[in-house]
Amino acid sequence: MLKIRLSRGGSKKRPYYTIVVAESTAPRDGKFIEKVGTYNPMLPKDAVRVTLKSERIAEWLKKGAQPTDRVARFLSQEGLVTWTASNNPKKGTPGKKAQERAAERAQREQDRLDAEAAAREEAAAAAAAPAPVVEEAAAEPEVEVAVADETPASE
Image (cartoon, rainbow, N blue to C red; front, side, top):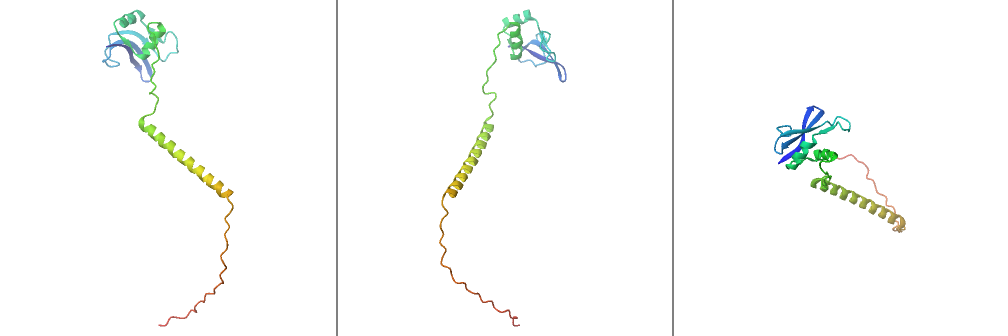
């Protein structure tokens, strides 16, 4: 299957891309069939940032070459292709384990809030209830405890 895609060039942190027609199984920067344009992301957005050979691209599209998403955006600006944004609703959702951790965290938080609410209700009930009347038991007479005289132990 033929693809119209970007092939990276340039140096480290200074990218420069050529738009090429290549077999989909070929390496990104490897063998290609034809160079059909350039893309320099370091330039501001203007006409020079992307250059395309529109006639050649139109021929390759008729032959069945499929543009990648980024190249399709460039081609839609030239009017060669109608590009619509793809919809991937699952892209931003967290994974299974992350969802489990979030559920655990939410459950712990809910338990903590429930415990605090129960403690507040209990404190309010204790404050609202009259203090229980405790009758003092009959006073027992104080008993003197006889302290034994300290005598030396017999040896």
